[in-house]
Each structure stands twice: as structure tokens, then as C-alpha cells.
Image (cartoon, rainbow, N blue to C red):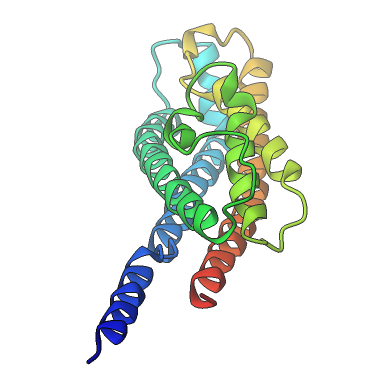
Length: 219
């Protein structure tokens, strides 16, 4: 092989090595963990709905621990682990997605650095819009078919607020059956919002991951 041929081959090898990998597997993990979180949330809402009559007994006997409340506390612990797994997987997916976006569309102006992929979700104040920007920018840079990301983000903010409202119930604070019913209704609404959020998130993750695969395959 001539020196020119060797040089061309070397350049080709470097180019191939520099092509990033589409985050297909981690995208699947993101969807799986999100599905688990949703399933746990819906299950908890179902448990308290079916156990409403038993929960209302706490009003007359604060020391009574209804099986429904015990089950919800167990589901909450499992849900926390699922949320942590989803958080890590989503950050990993965003970093890989951004890597492909930077390679495929180097001229696209991202509003946030990729290192925010993990921190943006938990840092106070900025968590209200940084994650939205990270997801939207990388998706748009890759030409995702999702036109708007606001419905998903609004759903996410409502879910976060609702989860804070219904989490860790203190039965001694229930002074009437109405208090219990309000809490159960909050669980039901939060579960419904979580299902909506999952559907919107599922579409975003699949579309962005597919766009990344197309970008890499089209090189």
C-alpha cells in the first residue's frame, strides 16, 4: 500500500472511531425506569382508593395503622429507588444524546452545558427550567420529530408538586374523614398526571433516540 493509501486508511479509522454511539440502550433503560415509577405511583393510588374506608378509621384511632397506609409506605420506598435509577439513567442518556448532537450539529447553540444533565434536576430554582432546555436543545439539534416539549415539562412540574403534597402522610394530622379523602384524591390526581407525563416523556425519548441513530447511521 502506498503512503497516500496508508494515510487515507488512517484518516478513515480515526473518523470511524470518532463517531459517537447512539444512546439506544440507555434510552431503553430510561423508558423502563420511568415505566416502573409510573406503575408504582398508580399502584399506590389504587391501594388507597380501595382502602379508603379503612384509612378513615385513623381519624377515630390515630394509633391504628391501616394495611393500605403500610402498603403505600412500602411502595414509596420502592418508588424512591426507582426514581433514583430513572434520574441516573436520564442523565446518562442526556450526556450521550448531547455527544451525538454536538457531533452531528456542531453549529447548534445549546443553552446549557452537558454537565448539567445530572445536577439540573435537583438544584433548587434552576430545576424549574434547566432540564427542559437540556432535553429540548439536544432533541432539536438532532432533528427530533417532537415539535414542542412544553406539555411534558408542565406535566413534570405538576407531578413534582403533587408528589410533594401526597408523600409521607402523617395520619395523626387527619382530623376528619374529609382530610383523608383530600389526600386520597391527591394520590389519584398525581397518578393520572404521572401516566400523562409518561406518555409524553416516552414520545420524547423515543424520538430523540431515533434521531440520534439516524444521525450516526447517516454518517
